[in-house]
Structure formats: C-alpha cells, structure tokens
Length: 164
Image (cartoon, rainbow, N blue to C red; front, side, top):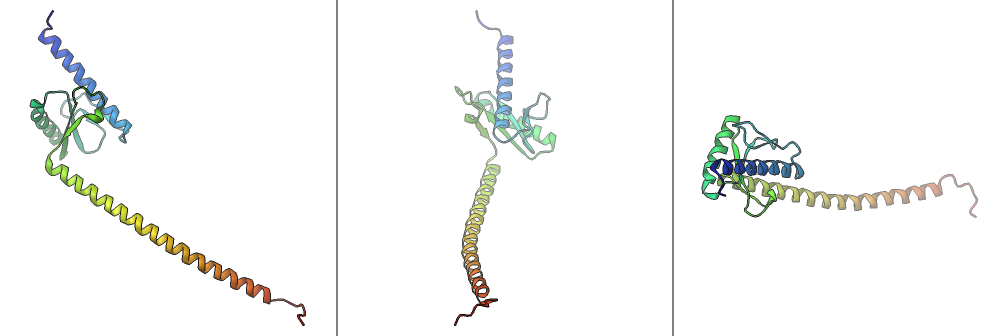
C-alpha cells in the first residue's frame, strides 16, 4: 500500500526533528553545553551556541539554498550576522559527519583567525619555554653560588677553634 502525502510529510517532519535534536545533543557533547533544540519559528533549529543561527536539515541538496536563505532570515530576525546550514549526510547517523554550509567570506575569515590564534599560541609557548629554561638555569646558578658563598661565610665566621 502506498503512503499518502500526509504520511510522507509526517515522516519527514519526524525525521527532521530527530536530526535537529541529534545536532543539539552532538553540540552539547562537543563543547557547547547550552545547545538545545528550539521549536519556535524564526530562531533557527539549535540555540545556545553563541551569536550564530543554525538551520539543521535533512532536505535534498537541491533545496540547500532555500535552507540557507531561511537561516539568513532567521539570523537577521534575531539580530545575528552569522548563520549556517547543517546538512545530514545520507547514510550517516552521526551529526559530526554531516556538512556545514556557510558563506565563503565568513569561512575564510574564521580560518584566518584560527591560524593567527594558533601561531600566537605556538609563539607564546615557545617563548615561555625558552624563557623558563633560561631563567631556570640562570636562577639555579645564582642560587648555587649564593649557597656556596653562604657556606664559605658560615664556615669562617664564629670559628673560635685554634687552627695552629
């Protein structure tokens, strides 16, 4: 027996809601503890990840630009300047294996910021280790010299024994 359009629509809504909830759960497990599925219109599908609108979809690829327009409109309604579409990959249940569509100018700016941060972090770590090692060795030498001088001073002070 063939399914009716109503049955197909209900199944699609159920599967779409399941994907949205899976995406929110995945985000919670990967560094966004406030992520949650949102039912209201004009707010995106997942909230709690900062000032970005996330539209989660299981729609076919030929509908992706409709979803991107929807995500942009929802972002604008919320006062956000960033939005993405999180597309489920066919045959993969893990949202981490899905695709994220975002504007190229936003993606490459984000990538440039990430690389700049990584370089700054690496430079900081290198300078810290270099400074620590130099400081530690110099400090050790100074401390040993002071201890040695103190031992010499202590051994000659107050020595009342006759050494003759």
